[in-house]
Image 1 (cartoon, helix red, strand yellow):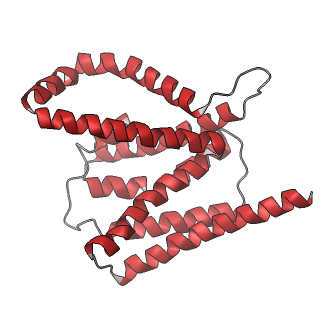
Image 2 (cartoon, one colour):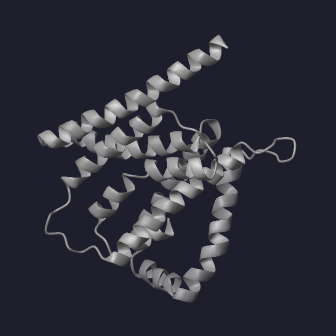
Image 3 (cartoon, helix red, strand yellow):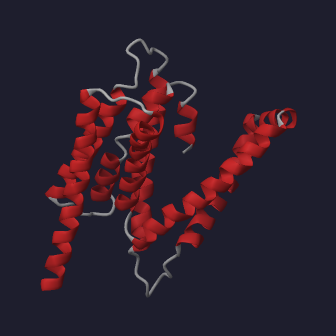
Amino acid sequence: MTASNESLRYVSYPTQSLAKSCKLVPTMIMGVLVEKRKYSVHQWVGTFFITAGIVIFNLNNIKRDDKTSSTYGLCLVGLSLIMDGLNSSYQGLVKVSDPKKYRILGASESMLWINTFAITFFFPVAVISGQFFTAIKFFSRNSEALTAILYLNLMAAIGQHFIFLTIVSFSSLVCTTITTVRKFMTIILSVAVFGHSFSWSQWCSVASVFFGIFLETSWKKTEQKVIKVY
C-alpha cells in the first residue's frame, strides 16, 4: 500500500488504476510460485478476460497527452503489484497451515495483527521522514479534513474487515477478484445514476469482464459437482 500511495506523486491516478486492474495476474502467479497452487484453465482464461476487459475500459479514461508518469512512479506501481501478489499468497499459506501446530487466525485477529505491525513499522518512518509532523500541521489548519479522514478510516476499517473475512472464508484469489470487479461495477453503476455514456470498446470490455466472471463461476460449480460425486 505504501508503494501504491507513493506512486501517485509520480504517476497519474488513471495510470495507477490501469496498472492495478492487472492485480489478478500477480496474485495467481505468486499463488503458483509461493503456495504451489494449481489453477485450472477456466481460472486462467477467466482472469485473462476480466483483466483485459478492465484494462481496455480504463485505457479509454487515460488521455493520450498525459505525460505525468515517470519511470520511478511506474516502478513503484509494479512493486505494489508484486507485493499485492505476495501478500495474497502468504495469507493463503497462513490459512492452510497445520491446525495441530498453529491456531488459524480469524478475520478480526488477522486484521488486528497486520495493522499493528503496520503501525509499528511505519510510525517511526513517518516521524523520521517528517511526514507525520507535516500531517499534524495540515490537520491543525484544516479541521474539516480531519473529520473527513476519520470517516474515511472508519469506512476503510469496516470494509477491511469484510476483506479479511473473505480471505479466511474463501481464498485470496476470490478476494482479489471481488475487489477488482467491485471497482469496475462502481463505474458501471455510474452509467445508470449519472447518465454517462460508453464507447463501443468500453461496452466490449464490460462483456469481457462478465464473461470472465461467468467462466470462473461455472468452473467452481463444476468443481463442486465433481467433489459431490466423489
